[in-house]
Length: 139
Image 1 (tube, rainbow, N blue to C red):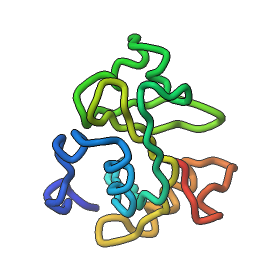
Image 2 (cartoon, rainbow, N blue to C red; image 1 turned 180 degrees about the vertical axis):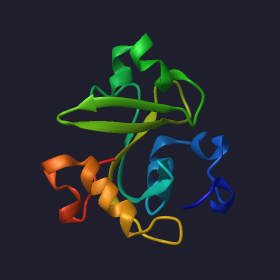
Image 3 (cartoon, rainbow, N blue to C red; image 1 turned 45 degrees about the horizontal axis):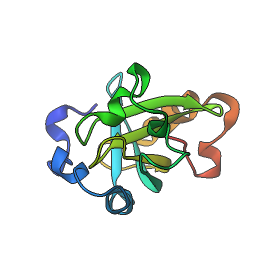
């Protein structure tokens, strides 16, 4: 089992996200994101991102600020989560009201913090969909 003290010290701070959406999207590629569940670190390496600007119709923020979209209008680095097309979507607010980066896909990651049991837990979380079996994980 791993503790918070064992986490790598290279965390991304808010200044990383307080930049243009396309730049942040590009620089997030290859980054490992983690979440601890019942003492197990679930980790994925980001392999696909997408930048969204408020004036793009594909962006939720183009519909305006609302309680459900509030995070996209908050300072850079806030999370905006929503359910769409059978899966959850993870977005980070970036520089500029309503601009964001969507994490489209990640690859299961095993290292000193995330062991094979972590992969099994992520596979179980995906249910029967089998996203992990194809070496791609929807984040």
